[in-house]
Every structure is written in C-alpha cells, then in structure tokens.
View (cartoon, rainbow, N blue to C red):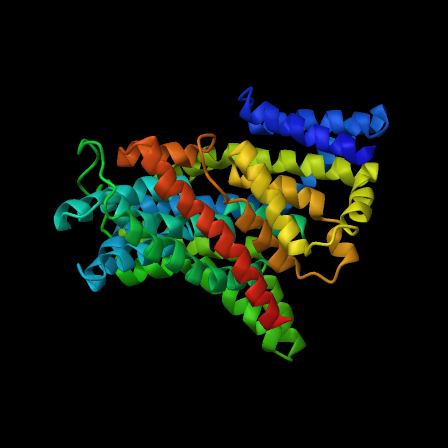
Length: 439
C-alpha cells in the first residue's frame, strides 16, 4: 500500500509541475506534506520532518552551488569565458571547427550553468556559421552536447552535487568518473551525430550573427588566467581526491580530505577568481560583489527546489516506505544502475526538468545502497544520464534551442531531442563499461 501511495504522490508531483505549472519548490513541499500524511507520519511531527529534510539537504550543498554560481558569473562578466572560446577556436581552425566548438563547450560548461553557457556560446556558433557558411545546427550540436553532459554528469552543477549528497558519493570521484564518461559521450552524440545534420537550415537569418562581447570596464584576462581561474575547482577536486586514494601518509590524507571538501575547494576557488578575474583586471571589489549578488539571486530558486526534494526524501525515510521499496526493487531482475537510469528517464520525460528527475529518482533509490554492493559514484552518473533523456516540449532547453536556432519543430526533434537521447543512452552504456573496469 505504501508503494502505491508513493507512486500516486510522485504522479501528483509531476502533474503539479507539468500540467498546472506550479513552481517546482512549492510542488515538492506540497507533495512531501501529502506523502507524509498518507504514509502515516503523525501530524504533530510532519512539519518538523519536512523542515528537517529541507535543512539537511541545503546544509550539504548550498555553499557549493552558491560559490560555483558566483565563479560562473565572474567568468562571464570578466570576459574569461569569451577568451577561452576564441582561443580554442583559433587553435582548431576551419578544418576542425566543430571539434573546437565541442572542446569550448566542455571547458566553459564545467563552471557555468547550462542556460548561462547556452546564452553565452550560441552567438559564437552563429558567428562561426556565418564566417564559414555552414549550418548553425551542424556546428551547434557538438558544443551543446558538451554543455548538456557537463550539466548532467559533472560537479559543481546542481544535479550531480545534489545526487552526490543524497547518495553519499565522493564528489571528487564523481567528477573523475564523469569526465571519463563525458569525453566519449560528447564525441559520439555531438561530433559524430552532427554529421547527419548538415542539411538542417534555419527558417531565416534573423538570429544573432555576431559573437557577443561581454561588457567589461577593466582588462580582459589572458587565456591561461581564464582557464586556470574557471577550472580551478576541477583541478582542486581531482588532485585532492587522487592524493587521498594513493597516499599512505595519514597526515597528508587528512589535509587533502579537509582542503578537498567541496565547499572549501569552492571557497578557495572563489577567492582566487575574485583576484585573478576581478581585482587584477582593474575591477573594483564592489563591482565583483555586485556580480556575486546577481548570481545568488539567479540560483536561489534552484537551491530551493533541491531543498524541496530533500523534504520528500526525509518523509520517505521517516515513514519507512524506503525499506518497502528496497524489498520490492530487490525482487526485480534488473541491474540497479539500469533501474536508476530508467526511472530517471521516465520522470524526465514526464516533468521536463533534468534536475527534478534526478532528485526524485535518487530519493527513491537511496535504500538500494544499503542492500547492494553498489558504487554510489556510478549510481550518481546512472541517474544523471537518465535525467537527460528525450528532451521535448516540456523542457525549457528544447524551446531555447528551437527559438535561438530558428528551426522547425520537426528539425528540433531530429537534432536536439535525438542528441539528448543519445547522450543519455551512451552515458549509461559507458557507466557499465567503467564499472567493469574499476570493479
């Protein structure tokens, strides 16, 4: 009975978001309260359970997401992202222009939220398309595949960060494994798949045809400075995770664990970026802080949605429905990674939001970690891959692609939706390949 109640509550959550267009945070809280009531949590403790789940979830990831958002904002406003894009394009030249766009999308996509990276890089795609007289879709898919993969697989993006917290994964290892899976995925779903899209034409050329120049009153940072500053969180998490794995010196391992804590790494990175991309570029501290204020406002709703998912997770744990789910799931003859991928894919198709799909799936699957010898880092990536499946009309990214590239609905499905589905399917395939290598 409790599983039926949970299924109805998840369906209720999907209906609220997809049909009635209720704010996702409000929908999560309403669903958590209804689920708690029907699952038998006492009324005098229901509110406290919801608040506890929200607080514990936000306590573990808020600093990371906020600091990461601020770094991304400064990377854009300082011109660093633009410098990286133009430099990589200069290296690859016309012959390998799509490879250059793909690499640019991956580098820029790591520190930036998907929507920010999309808006920043689309004008670059249009400029290159105009210069070389090539199809915008043909050039754009490799870069946008890179952005999508970074959004679904790699910390410090909200979904991988939240999934790592829920499933008790090691964020450094999620990042390392995620990069190993991301590279072949974007090569196939981006670079190779785009070869089939050469004949897709825009309906008109009213789009943006010039590379957007970032307004910056100070100096523009050099490429080395831009790359170092934007990717320092990646370097920091990777190095400290590797030292923790290979070092036998307990003191060094403890130092690495402390410094390598994601919130500490992100704070160090933010401090470095404030100087390298801000003060060093002749910007005032006040203008940099204004950027941070704007960034925090932009990410506030995402943080609240993640907190709402934490409330639903807590209700499930307190009510004991998670144990019932484990008993039922262990009867299904399907690998847990594939089950995680399928659940996330189904919810993604229904809701449209990759982040919401990942969080809802992780909340349900958490008990599996206690009953199976699973690698939580690969489980995070399995859910992340499923959450990217089949972007269609209920996904804002679908409409951003269609309207910016000014193409028909049919061509949007043929290019964007197929690319996202390929990313999802290839992601879970490479999870299994990686699992066979490391275990």
